[in-house]
Structures are given as structure tokens and as C-alpha cells.
Length: 202
Image (cartoon, rainbow, N blue to C red; front, side):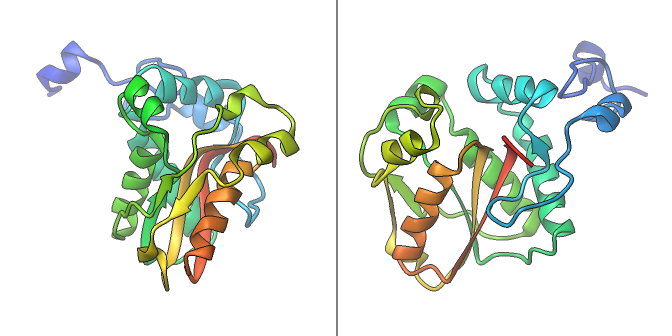
């Protein structure tokens, strides 16, 4: 028997928004732009285009925080399939206070919490924004993006000696992720593995 909640709010595919018994309908599972060859600079289940791009915009800008469970599970599966072991800690790319105020939540922290829960690893706030920069969406050129976030993040001393999994939502040029990774390694992290929900290229 369906629950009252299901009757009032029938479950839908997170990607096409059509009614579905699962979070990804069979049609989307076949047609979504899956990453076919993982790269160690940043693991990801999807390419950032089509329905994935639309879904991530809802997740990031329109308050669909519940999508973190779906995306986090797919990111976890991607890591396990790639042979990535359970890390000592999972952290996330932090947002500025202004962004958090406008959005109401950190999409990267939500994803990190889902991945950490799946691994059974501790979720730790190991990075913070130490210099205010413009939004990366204002830049398309890789070098401009790198210049924009240079020195923007600082890692906490607690990162020392840890094997860390660093989580973000979208990997475009890698500028933000690389800057955060560099900050963690500078703080003494033993190793940093990066994962995101979607990347711009194979």
C-alpha cells in the first residue's frame, strides 16, 4: 500500500521529474551523460550537460537540497567502483558567507555529508574561505578562474596527516578544487582525493 506521503507527493525521477518508483527512472539511467573513463584529478559520475546540468541547477540554485542524497550515492558508487578506499575524513569546498546566506545551505557540504555517510567516514570542516573572490561563473577562461581563486582558501591544522576526500558539486576547469587541494596539502594532509557530481569534460 502506498503511504499518504506518496499519494500526496508521488515520487519522481530527480532528472526528468517524471513519476518514478526510483530516484532515477529507467529512461534517464540509459540516457544520462555518464562519465565513461575516470580521471584521478577528480572523480565524477556525470558529465555536466543536458538533464544533469538542469538537475544540478535545481539543486544548487532552487532549493532542491534533497537531491544531495541521490547525487551523493552516485558519487560514492563512482569512488567505490574506482577502488578508492574509505578516507580518514571527508570535507567540502566551502562557500562564502554571502553565498550561504543567499542560498540557505552549502550544496557541497550536503554532498559531502551524503558521501561520508555512505563510507562511514567522519565529515569534517577542514577548509574555510580566507579571501573574498568573485563568483567563478563570471569567468570562462581557465587562467582567469585560477587567478580569481588564488589564495581564497585556507585549510585548518586538523588536516595534518589525514587521507582526505574533497567534495564539490561541479568540476569545470579545476581551479577551485585545485586551490582547495593545495591548501589541504600545505596544511599537511597526506593525500587528497577529489570527487564531484559532474565534470565539464571526460
